[in-house]
Length: 228
Image (cartoon, rainbow, N blue to C red):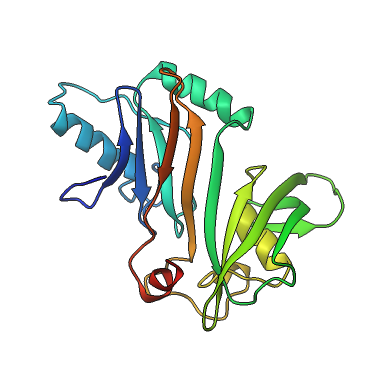
């Protein structure tokens, strides 16, 4: 693992891909806020490290919500980007998340199936038990890993990748993620983060075909530290 002076934590890099550990608050790629995106930080890192002249190619493979931390994959070549996008569509990239929730679910392990509908006006999704017009099926599997004093740590494997999926599906069963005001938390975290972390990723490298397995360290704060 490699950290730079601008706090970029590189978990894996080669000629075709670079995997970083996003801090809560960073945006994966540029948006209407105009804030500097993580993609620009990664481009600068590549440009300086490899002394690259001109523009650096970097393709965004997937996104994480701004208040979420953890693994983000970027493609360094168009070949890798095209193949990784195909792998995402075919669900051959295995993503595992950690979430710290206020109320432990009734079951220690379960599969949640809902139909989610996004409201673009407030950038929020709603979970339904049955399909409604404009909704998309969402499936996740969770297990309770640890009981903390006031919270519980869940490990989540996603079968689908919907807008705010983990946040809305956990909130729907009464297990709101710590700090997630948008989905029912009573208090925000001081730094504006939520306790949702893209913890592990596993996939076959799009070019070399080797198995890539990466684990992202959790942010450093008392609650996350208690999870380890």
